[in-house]
Amino acid sequence: MTDSETMAGRFSGCLLGAALGDAVGARREGGGMGTEREIAALIDSSTLPLTYTDDTHMTIGVAESLIDCGGFDGAHMAQRFVSNYSSEPWRGYGPGPPRVFRLIRDGEPWDTAANHIYRGGSFGNGAAMRVAPVGLLFRNRPGELQRAARLSSLITHSHVLGIEGAVLQALAVARAVDQDPGRQLDAAAFVSHLLTFATEDIYHSKIDSLSSLLEHPDDRRLVIGELGHGIEAFSSVPTAIFSFLSHPGDFAATVTYAVSLGGDTDTIASMAGAIAGACLGVDALPVKWLARLENRDYIANLAGRLWQLASATL
Image (cartoon, rainbow, N blue to C red; front, side, top):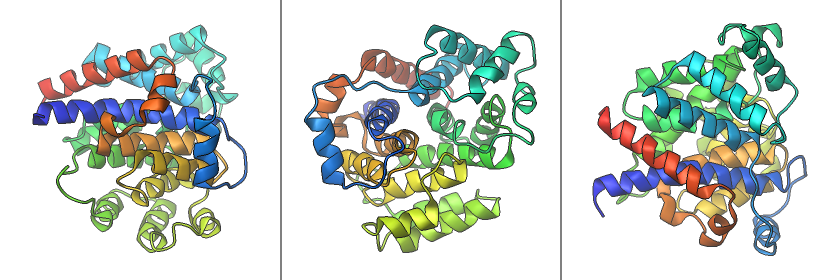
């Protein structure tokens, strides 16, 4: 397999992995802790389609806009969100984004509309959950990656903690997709890399704790107590990264572990699945899961087009 084929497979693994994590996690959203075996049995015993939520729906919108514009364009991306939401409003959107979308549709600028809905800006994980395509496209350009992640966040989440969550998730995807396939993942180096970009104390503290927590991944109460499993970006992005780092060679184990922590399972598993898929490639994704994933061919096509754009701009 050529380097280009490997990288194309990682782009597909990332976007399809995000969708699988989302769809698997949606089965347990808001639930308590479980075991990885229970989660796997729940998924494997069903024949129902794996249906994704707004997490993947918005990730698709980010990828579509990046491809159409050849890079980041805030006004275009915002309008794509509005259009996609109008087509499929039943994807499980929270109450805030549709209100933002209505303001944008009515003429409010894309980078100020959210401030009318959230006083001080939202620090939820809505920007981080959809940012994987940014991490892929700008994986070798950290300055442009941070800029695009920040600006894409502003459309709905303008609080500094919501923005930094999106930046760190994009950086984790970028770091994962460029891992040397012939070497075992160096978790300490992965954490150290992210620490250099963590500017807010709460993120720096949580990212810094990942290395010590990796000694106790089965102590889920400890992991949740340190990292969280909620809808806030700072309570979910580090948790998703930890889920990957604790199972770096196994996509299914990464996702089932993320879901086993309970809480905001669809978003945490989606972010963890994006990182794991970026690192391991599409061939590491469970074939039985993929066969049941809705819209998988379109998502794979987007990944291929995003790789073509990324390779053309190196």
